[in-house]
Length: 397
Image (tube, rainbow, N blue to C red; front, side, top):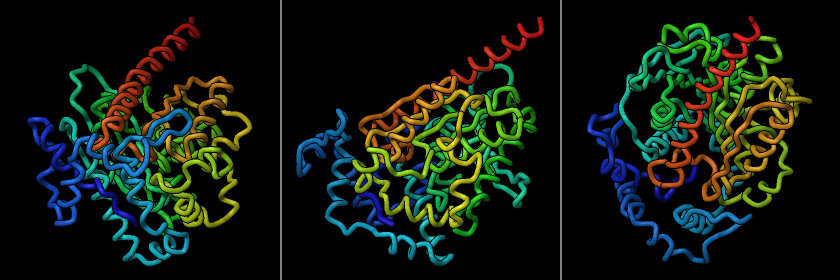
């Protein structure tokens, strides 16, 4: 898998701005290699350094201007041979190769994600229909009295890599900005565990959180689901399954560039399907690995845009990146939710690419996007709970 030029620059950037109390994962915990130190030297240059070294003019598409650092990386990557589907499949064909890719992803995502205030963190193992599910629970210091809202969060990674370790700093940022307890789910990965294993783990973790919210210091009436990319898909599946079964659904959804459909007909696929961090070759490969049975790609309560109606789904925040092949399907999801009477906020961040959450320590626009969406979620789930309680009260009068 390709390494990014700026992957390790976050270490020094974050060390310069880290809070007084050291977080559990701090810059000192990361021992840089010589290659990473070389990358760091470049990555610490100011934005104008990148602008001056661009090979072409600032990239603009659909009225959006790509972030200068991301454009610099795109131009650097263009000189390399693109990864094809056969190469990518070969990279996942043995347990040893998969373990190496997953360890590398955990490290790179950690290094380039922003550090926020420390908090209580606990690792647990909870029961699931497919076996024990590891989760990591975050309890931020909010100064609030009473139980906090709870967010059950599913990481991205195309169903084939990443973990609660990879998104540890991302989840801390969300917990702090939203002022919510987060249960981060280490669901099973493909190809060892294809559909429906990740989806089952996602649902089981939500059901567990609903039962145990009070013991976590959370409010069982204010439980949401969220995730990025593949994790956004898992959040949607969890809500769709509750609706289909007639069980209480999550109160709110926080979705970052979610995988909503396997259809590739959107214009954003044609515009951004190669060179922007999420290539079509990778999408095709992880689809084959995570959904090897073609029938699973049409399973009920699996792909939101295949549903005849989305009425009854939770209120939702959908955040997309301007330079992302998944941009348009996220926009279509938001439009469908609104049409079907579901409260929705759609936010597109025009300068960014897919997976912008794990660039929050390097790209100012990514940091802003992560913080403002999380803060909005915290406000929205609290407001939603108040509105629901008021509706219940009036119904009983």
